[in-house]
Length: 281
Length: 287
Image 1: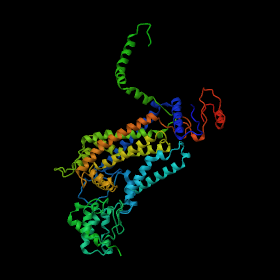
Image 2: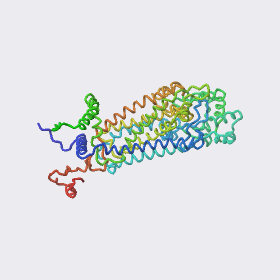
Image 3: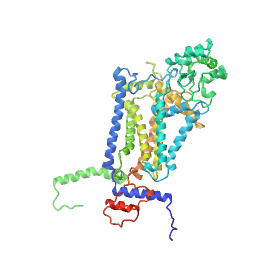
């Protein structure tokens, strides 16, 4: 029995016909992978290996080679960083460069309302779209000129990734030595009582400003809130101490690391300072 | 088989014997596994005749991964994943072993440098390869699954970056990981559990280091190798796409309703319609 003739082939039939034609074409008039394609692949692979060796050599010789000091910053950063010390407090959390776009994304979204968008929301949506791409774009045509929507979307994605990476790379780091210069100004503008003086010194040197801003200084990384007038919320010394010891215990989901290693005395000093920060009016 | 009219010379006999000796293990292997046939198919399968340099990015990324695997194995021979303090120097053991690799081990600085920078090269090449596939529309039917496998390899590569970053146990590594894990912890439902699992406790410690080490050199590389194998299998099975602007091997634009192509040496009536005059103008049959 003859099948009922259809006017138009279904999409699946079209796809299969196209692929069958591709297979036949390549079989009839393609060229063998070895040696033609393999020749290009080999050259490219050699370039890759030489690039990697070159980077390793530049890393070593622009750092250690010039100064005989592995902590020298060289062209590609120091060969050896100081060892991890959970007790230190002056640090700048900085991932490897290919995470800069995520790192900077967290500066755009602010704790607590929208930081979730930066840490989970946007990356999840982006990844879902990436995986779903072949199912969103099912037309057979492959020429870039015939795919304006895909091309514009692609260029926008690359641009935004590049800008976020660039902004992440050049993001200002608040170094303890620079932040310390603000202390006299803070004391005057915030009308800090002398009891808060040990706390303000700690605040400037303990790495808080790597993420938090305070009266115009500091980093605003990872969606950390501004602390200029945190004291006007009257959260209380006990809350501040509990929060510093274990932020996520008090604020579930907080990305702030625990500072219990500072010790109870210094945490108390910091809490006094934070409660005394009533803003600059 | 060729039959010799005359008696074969000594040289011919020797060559025949040498050939048999070389071929015996290959034939043995082929008979029992079919692997030789597989390799032959891989090497001599046809690819479109107009593939271009952009299409070497995939194999370039594979090369970068192989560099990572080889240098990683060498590093693992000298690296100690321990956050304990060395009683003689007062420094963490893991950090000291990295300094030792950089300063004392023969060519250790090169191996570590290649691993450190090879990671970046690997990630860049994966992104470039992905960009090429996107530009060529090579993720379309029937290669959708291979696109997804590729995205998973990219994800795994970035996880390798995240877990490997902690291993030198220096200040940058430590604090970046503290924050990184805290960010994982903000995810709903699984987040806190995942953060707890990665840390191996409430705070980052030696247990975090051994966990990251195990993930970095066993679990994730294993997953990447499996995914790359699947990726390559699909490439060989489905074939390499030609550039989208080529009218040649992969066929042109179906929306242009291209008439059936004339092959050189084949006599067929020229179909009536839009393409006919163009075909007559170019005797090769290519459009």
